View 1 (tube, rainbow, N blue to C red):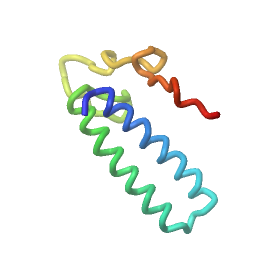
View 2: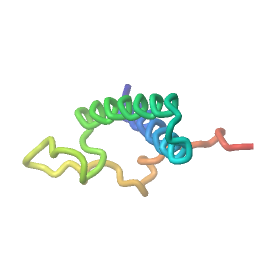
View 3: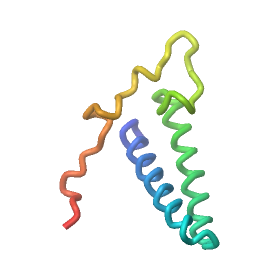
Length: 94
C-alpha cells in the first residue's frame, strides 16, 4: 500500500475502534465485540507501524523519533491541510 492507502486504512480502523469502544461502554460483556475491538486495535497498530517506518511519525507524542538529527513530525501534512484529509465526494449519506 502507498502512503495514502495506509493512512486511509488507518483512519478507517481508528474510527471502527472508537465505535466499538462506545458500544462496549454499554455492552461490556459482549465477547464478540471485545474480540473485534482487539483485532481492530492489533491491525491498526500493525498498519501504524508500517506507515511510520516508511513515512514518518503520525503524532508527536506516541512515536519514536526515527531520525535523531531532524524532527520529522513537522514534515507530515497537518490535519487542517487538504492533503491530510480524504475526499468523501460521492459517499454522502442519503
